[in-house]
Length: 503
Image (cartoon, rainbow, N blue to C red; front, side):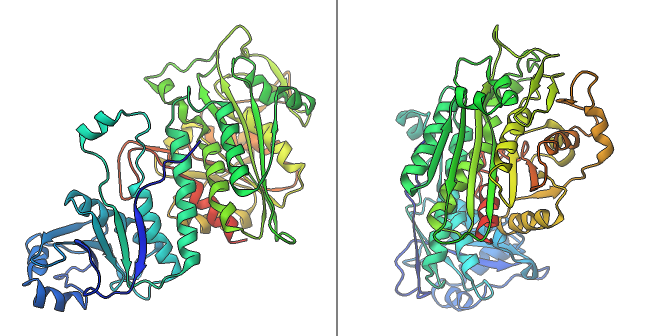
């Protein structure tokens, strides 16, 4: 799939407001319980050139610099509009706070119909390459709008098109590495967004394979796509059991990035790739949940987005990107409750719920990844509604028996501005997976359902450091905030990229 790249031009320039030619300036202010004052040199600029209009607007709105807050005004100058954004507590300023502040300021500038916007670094303490990359990410991700399935007339009539044409980051050091990183990660995130947002008649297993082929062609990666016969030869009975009801042929995707020289580590990223999940014979009937099951390949989207992000950045680790892509459908060939499948590690699985299919596809994918003799592997899956009940819509669950790997992922998520939370892997909960007729059942007790799902996956990992991210909640949002639009979020790409780049 070809990403709809935003038309926004982002550049870096010295903080010379006499030389900069633009119509809207964004200034950040930290939070204070007292009256918030503009930082220098903007306080002097406001007094001498803008007749104190900005300070007056801040006072009248009782602006306190709280994160997410903005105030704007028009000034009589070549710079015609000023937006002040809240940065929150100065002691807690993070890269994520910068991403959000830049995006919030640009949202307000766009509402003011500005076309050329400057973002000032003067209020940030010692702007670094990380804050520069974060600022660019916030701008690019806000500017990205998915309009593929709307006609030109509808887009024009609803007036929702992002109108800013250029953003200049004033006062940041121009660091090519930071610029490249931000553009790569933003592009990977946008790809994941568009894969998740597209309907199931557009993003099919074949479309995911085509996307992997396009990534391989663009960046010179190795690609192996296994068809039904090849998967059957490897004994992938769990994956093929899910796939057997669909008219769409399954595709097992293995994309490989190899660095120049000896890799520091060998890693595997595995994404659940259910391009549509009807629930099978255990049909999804609650509410309108079935209509949203195009998002059930959110893990696969994150993995392919991560490939797009890291390939141009050339990390030192070798990375394998793995997706078992299929649909879970209903037909005369459909998997029955009570059937027994044999996975590629010869473990047998009694199917007590055909709607717990993602873990079956991941089972064979985990076995495949471990045979590559990687040092660590991480799977991402929109696996359980139980994880949404536990953590809500904004936080992914992190399950891992490996403390060091968990800490690496938590640190990466913090840098990326994505929320993950460690969850327990209580061994006793695995008792609910016991079967009288097979090695295990595919679902356990309703209570602690996300935990028993992770324990099921663990049965297909023998010795490799492994973590499971249940991303069922944060891959989609019903509300826009900062640089995230309503709809697909691209969750997971930034965390995976940060983790890999740190190796």
